[in-house]
Amino acid sequence: MNTQAPLATDSLATWLDYWGHVHVTGIDLGLERVIPVAEKLGVVNPQATVFTVAGTNGKGSTTTTLAAILKAAGYDVGLYQSPHIYRFNERVKLGGVEVDDQSLVQAFVQVDQARRECGLSLSFFEATTLAAFVIFKHKNCDVWVLEVGLGGRLDVVNVVNPNVAVLTNIGLDHTDWLGDTIEKIAFEKAGIIRANIPVVFGGQQELPQAIADKAKECHAELYALNRDYFYSMDDNAQTWNFASSATTLKLPTGALALDNISTAVAAVLASNLNITHAALSEGIQNAKLQGRFEVRQIQGKTVIFDAGHNPHGVEFLLKQLKQYRVHHPQYAEVVSVFSMLTDKDIQSVTELLKDHIALWKIAALDVPRAAPLAQLDTALRFNNVQHFDSVKLAFKSALDETNNNQLILVCGSFHTLEAVWEYLQECQ
Image 1 (cartoon, rainbow, N blue to C red):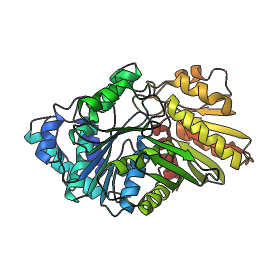
Image 2: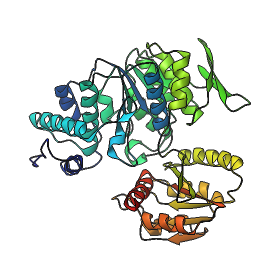
Image 3: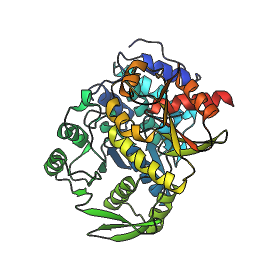
Image 4: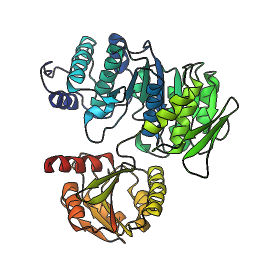
């Protein structure tokens, strides 16, 4: 706790390294240490409309769409997401633009001063999340759109009281932290619900009882997909229909998953904000998200980046991949640059992918929770697999050796994408 803090003139990298070492553990669920610091910083009840989004998959697409719609409606929007893929600054956006290094450093100075005055330690995630809130407060954002990192009830994002709570799909992920059943995990996610606020549940699954119970306990009006609101795709695939008891809308499809776009639409309509049909349409069309079926041309090769790292995320990736290959039939095979974290469901993920991948190029990630090469190899034992010393070398091999009839798919973890991005930066 007495670690020497960097100066306000030090770099963002120096501050991020500091936050990585000032607390004993990287993940430390619970709000006891965070709340006093958040209160000192004055971010618990902001003078803004707050959308808090929790769930297992779809949070990034939902928060991105929310922010884009609200920006199109003329609001000054602060968007907080995690984790980042390529640069830390991706986590904090103002009006859709990544915040600059200096704004982050200034916020870190305030967070560090507040936590020292409280005599408390903060984890990397807690400190960096509070810094985002400090920036939104300083910039007088009309709306805060906040993505929960892990769970909900005990996540640092939950120190801020939302005006609208949004819950996406609930799946089995982070079971060591959140519980080993859908209901246990749903209970943790439902912790973002507050008294008398609208709650949107956008999962395709049956509404978990834990969410229904929490909404009832809080007298919160609950809007559930396929019960209170619905969506359907038009035959032309360019437009879709949103329907509820209050309205019916025809809207453009956009680049992100329709499940998550419709959840965002339901959330803004449930709020007390003034949102026009034009703002909905413009926001949906402008919403883009790095690392979610992100297609790029690199050295003449088509590369798809996808951060899906659990079975539900991979199922959606495969749905998009199938659709992409229908429109691009020249791609006869997919070559995957692949790695995962050891605490993820590697067996289920590889089982889903195996029939779609002609060749795997695998390596262990250079992070503490990396799955060792032997673990990846065991999961892929009946597949065509090549081993590499690093993800960067695996990707270089993919670029060098694939032909024009092969797609390159980089997937398995946010960290896998980050390693490839670092390689591309080094090549510039």
